[in-house]
Length: 127
Image (cartoon, rainbow, N blue to C red):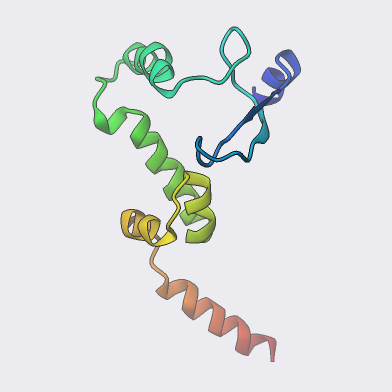
């Protein structure tokens, strides 16, 4: 479906000072999803006009647990489960401090004991 969307609506390059609006440095990025005028989607508009109506249409009561913030946590936990680093995740989430990301998402990190055992077992199995 994403490939079809890209074929139907090619990405739009948009230049913004992404990291800090006060900065002079501007960055151009391709946006896959845009407004009808092919601009950046405002997160509040998306939440009010797209996300909540879709949640209601699915028969789910809109709450904090079913909102965009929950989707952000799902994204973070999926990346952590796949082995992504805290530093990279912090960057993806827009956190300046990976320590903050670690404090917020540490409860979502998979237990490392099994990974540790596997790493050592693999090390010895190779020799």
